[in-house]
Length: 339
Image (cartoon, rainbow, N blue to C red; front, side):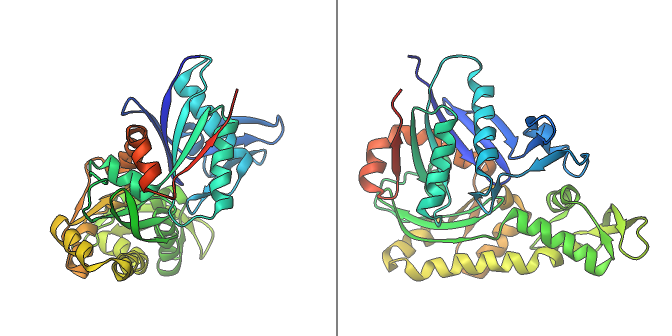
């Protein structure tokens, strides 16, 4: 039987698959289902473009919420379709390493495993997102040296300090990209009486979010539906608007980072002070966020190269560290399926 190893970052916002250390698929974690034909109408980028634009018989679904599977059937189908897109029609049952948020329950971990097994995986390994993020960022997590990572994805923000291949302290909060998008929608509803869509909010976050030095000058325009008369409307957009919209949630992330230090031994805190905090995940690219965290914690902070792909790269590289991680990192789980 042909062998293939896949690393999968099943994120709330994106699913990324790597093999050979190279990302071969990067699609939004979205699937569209036709209620009349009982078939999948689209998935990934094609389904993402359908959000807010479908007739009643087409349901556009995000099968993950806050970093965990909320719709098991659609998650299984999405993983299966993505794997098939990578391997084609070859008769291959791959080994898969999948990452999970550090704070999820055993039931939620099992749901992730069942999704991968139903998609045809031969062996499934689970690894916590912060560990995968550090591996993907190029850190040597096996040496006796404390390293801190802040991974801000679509559904969760995971903060962890590792040493000798294991997690010494960790915090996880369900406050990340999707929560920031919802905050922007709420801000424009309350302050401009304008209802904007989910995709529009995400685009505003990507284009105009600036935490450390926001400008008050109008930088763009957003369109939506007026909450006053129900007609089409628009409002100006500035970096300060977006900063005000997401400021409270950003502070929650910073408080999570601070609280993680409470469980870190003094020796490892010295290591973190020396090495700094590594930031990964799509939302780590918000302008000024690294400087804001550095100012609030007193620890230097830098964004990893290609932060969005760090976890996916780390999941694949974990195959080379399989024995070390299984011996030194007790939370990694291995589930096997025999064919």
